[in-house]
Image 1 (tube, protein in one colour):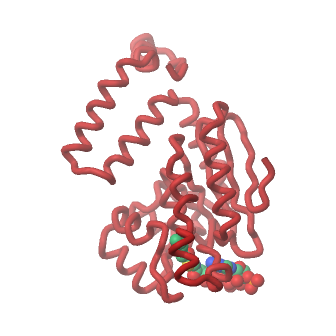
Image 2 (cartoon, rainbow, N blue to C red):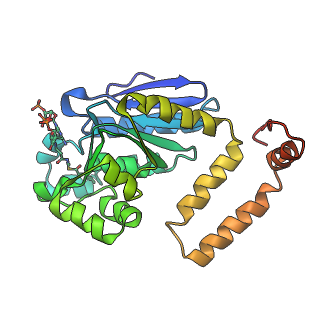
Length: 258
Ligand code: CO8
């Protein structure tokens, strides 16, 4: 499918989705959000795709929701229209891992979108921020909730209240990103991580994503039980038997997603 605001390529089991509104530093407008939700849903449904990488340009992953577009909206438009809810729900329904490869500005809705991914690999040029306060609004697609859970209350308050930007090193120190790499190596690293995931059993990958995400939704006790039962359930799969047998026989496992 051809998109106006995205470039989508599938390479060796990895769907690479590139935000492509260079004229607005990949600001998230209604069209981009609808196309992104569709592209992710398609990748999720495509048996050839085992992992997704979401990226922007060197200058910006995304500089936030589209301020020009939002500036024309009323309360009724955003509330009754439920701005961005269906799109984010579709994005979050994806059961395959999504890696955000972030270079340059990753602000407001852009930072929130990156946090909706499963992990973030950042270029050393990345700048994260929740500057909505400068526009007279609060974050709206998870910034106050996800950033707080990821980096803790003090830093989340600092970011949201001052609107300052955080560089890649600070983002790594704070646990917002999993690794920082030189900008030139960003796509190579992100694609290599995606390829590594693509080699695993798709069943186990799906289970890991569900287990880790569960930790944000439940108490520790319930989360531990969920994880334990998921572990037990994996013994109903051929891939568990193959994975363990391969280790014992000192060979590479041949997973079949069964
Ligand atoms: N929206 C629309 N256009 C944008 C945006 C944006 N968020 N960011 C940049 N652009 C446009 C600029 O207007 C400019 O366009 P033009 O050339 O036509 O004037 C072009 O991109 C290049 O930008 P700059 O000239 O400003 O580039 P600089 O390198 O000088 O500055 C910055 C880069 C610092 C990133 C600057 O552009 C900036 O501050 N951008 C806005 C950042 C921001 O405030 N983001 C938060 C937006 S609000 C939000 O994300 C809320 C999300 C929640 C939605 C919830 C819905 C339910």
